[in-house]
Image 1 (cartoon, one colour):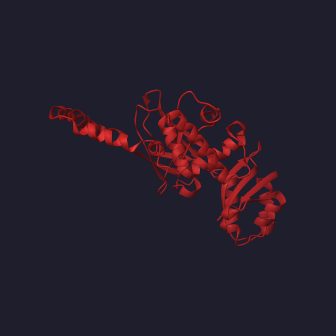
Image 2 (spheres, rainbow, N blue to C red):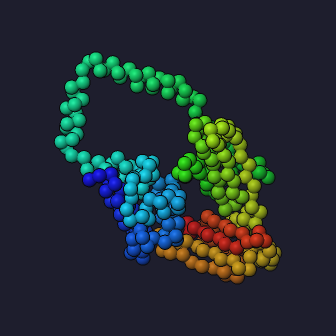
Image 3 (cartoon, helix red, strand yellow):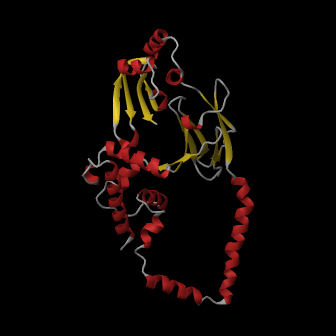
Length: 307
């Protein structure tokens, strides 16, 4: 089986994996909608901690036939999504035992004089490690711009983007580590329901820009107030009601994603405000994962995960 044929098989497995999470979809890549694409990007990001762009899916997955296979790093992401360690493992099943044995036989025929060639890669390894310090990962501190305190790792996501590949970085004690290779164009994308989004360019067109030692994130005042309402004990329900009316849009939509993949609940402004005015124990177990504001900066959309 050729690599193109293996890629077609991989595309089919991706489609089957998607149907496991969205059984209502029974179509093909040809009928894969823009919403299906967004759902797939979210699943890959959740499972592989990396993502692929919508444009890439239209270019390589939507077509019924492909003239060439995509880059290997993208094949690795899709292979991991369907349960393999990478593209090599996915294609390994096509290799015959005879081919492996033949390769081993060829290796045994290498003469001593050719072993001298091994010194060349060894020399390259020495050079590589001598320069490794130059590209040592850099640590960046993430702080609240107003309080100067480190951000809560559960409230912020940081992605390193290189060549359209988006990789989520781990946040420890308000810090992240990023690569520092001046030969690669990259940027940091910071997202949070409680802070304004921020993008930091690390390298641009070969011009090296040192990663900053610290990034200050500007908090969204209304989002912070909403978080406080959900976590605090009520003292003056009338005051809270008036404050909620000021920060919540009249067209507010709230989606609460239920545990164990049981679906979601919907609340409008009145229903959600009532939950906050008369809080229950279950309210404090809800985690805000997304907030969108309207043109007047009032909160218009909230997505909450039930924990």
